[in-house]
Amino acid sequence: MTLSNEQFDRIATTVITGFLGSGKTTLLNALLTQDGMDKTAVLINEFGEIGLDHLLVREVSEDVVLLNSGCICCSVRGDLISGLRDLFVKRTRGEIPEFDRVIIETTGLADPAPILHTLMTDPLLTTKFRLDSVVTTVDAIHGAGQLDNHPESVKQAAVADRILMTKADLADEATRTTLETRLRALNPAAPIHPVVNGDITVSKLFNAGLYDPTTKSMDVQKWLRDEAYEQHGDDHAHHHDDHGDHDHHDHDHCHHDHSHDVNRHDDHIRSFCITFDEPIHWDAFVTWAEIFTQMRGESLLRVKGILNLVGEDAPVAIHAVQHVFHPPASLPAWPSDDHRSKIVFITKDLGPQVIRESLYHLNAAVSETADGNTVKE
Image 1 (tube, helix red, strand yellow):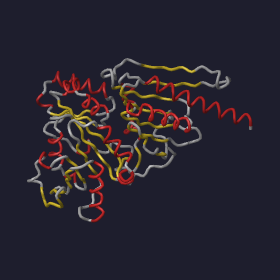
Image 2 (tube, rainbow, N blue to C red):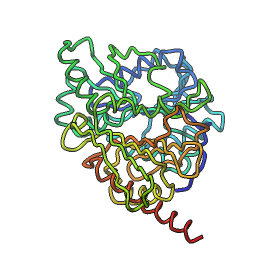
Image 3 (cartoon, rainbow, N blue to C red):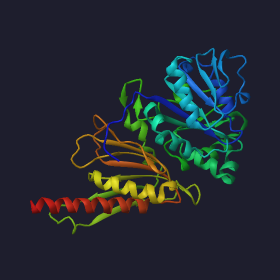
Image 4 (cartoon, helix red, strand yellow):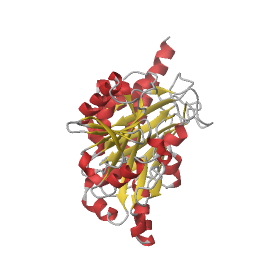
C-alpha cells in the first residue's frame, strides 16, 4: 500500500441491496422512470423480475436494453466482474450510450461485502468505476424478524450509506419506531428514509462517497459522518498523548472508551469510531492495515476514515472492505479546524479495543524509533 492520490473521474457506482421481499424491485421500477436516471446503467439479475415493457425503447443485445428514460438496463447472467466489463466494453465501442453512473442490484440473500470487495480489487473495475454509495432496503413490517433470523440482512444494513424503510405505510408507528431505533444502533451514520412504493428522489440515494460531483470537491464530513457516532453514544474512543517534558516511552496515555453497547446489535456486528489526537505515522498505519487485513480481514466489513499523518499538512482519506484497502486519497485541505485522525469501523466479531490498542502501540513504536534516529543524528 502506497500513498497516492485517488482518481475521481471514474464512473460512480451504487449498490442496492436488501433482504428478499424488501422492495428492491419496486424501488428500481420507480427509479427507472425518473428524469435523473438518464446516463445511468442498471445491472439487475433477471429482466423478468422487473417490468420493462412500458419503459423499453430498444433491445441493444440479449442482455442489454435501452429505456425511454435514457437508462441502460443490463441482465447479469454470470458474475459481476464480467457484467461490468461487458458493459464498459459496449460503452467504449459505442454500442450503448455514454453513462456516468452504474446501479447494481444484488440478490436478496447476497452478502454485500464480497460485492464491495470486487469493486475495490478487480484491476479493470478499479480503474473505471468507483463506489459511491450502498443503499439498503429494509421491510418496515418484516425487517425486525429478518434481522433476528438472517445474518445477511444484518450485514446489508450495517454497511449501508443509505437505509430505506420500505412499505412504511403498512406498518404502525410503534413498529416503525422500534425498527428505526434498531437500525440506528446498528448503523448510526446512515440516514433512514421511510419509503412507500419506491417513491424517493435519486438525489437522496446518490453522492454519498468522498467525492461530491456537484461541487467538484471532496466532502469529508458528509462521507465520514463521525459526528453520528458521538451523538449516538457509541464506542467513540480517543487517544490522548501528552508528551510534555517526558521521554516518549515514559509518558502515560489515557483511553476514554465510552462503551455503552448501543451499537452492539447482537454478539457479532459492531459500529464504532476511533479518534487519535496525535498524528499517525504512515508506516505504522500500513503495518497495522496489512496485519489486520491478513489476520482479521473477514471481520472488517467496512472501514473509512481521515488520517492526520506525521509530516503531511493535508489529511488522507482511507477506505477498506474486508481484506482490501482502497488506495488512499490525499485531500486538498482539512474540512474543519479539527485535525484529529478519525476512523469509522463496521466489524463482525471484532471490538474496538484490539483495534485501538494495536494501532496505538504500533504508532508509538514507530515514533520512538524515529525519535531515537533523530537523537543519533
